[in-house]
Length: 271
Ligand SMILES: [Zn+2]
Image (tube, rainbow, N blue to C red; front, side):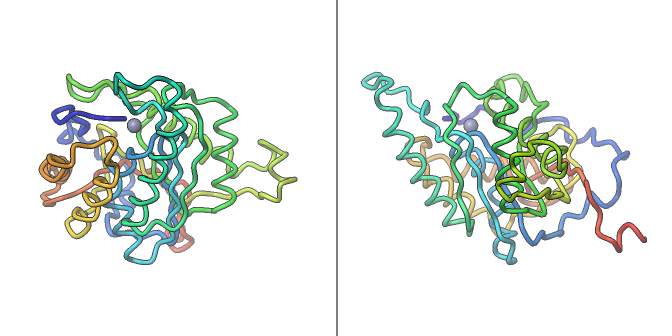
């Protein structure tokens, strides 16, 4: 969705990080072999986690990018009505494909749910379970289903929360549990266990990914969303967000996450 400059997405309160979370989650230089980014709208990923995805892709990670809607409500042009939606969806899918090409994303998936009407339904969870079992990502990257307010000037879009909730529960328990959605088995989709879930936009991050070398790529990807973004301001805006997220750890430019480690590697278990 379109965001005006000044609408903060970076949550405050980074200083209040609790020390209760396991040490392995602070492994900022961890590079997965495969990852899947799941978001509600075209551009959500590129505002929030694209620096991390570009960094991982550069290091050889195979990335799948899933958009649940095609952003067909992303216009307030008074000369348009609902008949513009299919055209806008096609336009925004093209913008997202171009952005993903910048980032080095290998696969782009559109589930084509209606923009602005998303709920964390069992049907959506099943569709996400299907793509997770199909692509078998080691890591899934999402927004924060629990985030309602950011600062005092941005109410989190309900589609963002619904996307994050459905994706989180697709990761666990649905993707790895054989008897949930048994018809996926008849499609040939066996259970798959995601090892880590990266949650962006949480007030208590525990993992900071240094994106100093990929911030420019993130900005270039974002600028592909020409129907949504005032490209004039986006450079400064993205630098400010990345600085804000890195501040707590003294990193110049970062994307901050809460990371759930759902499955440890064997050496980690033995250690
Ligand atoms: Zn959005």
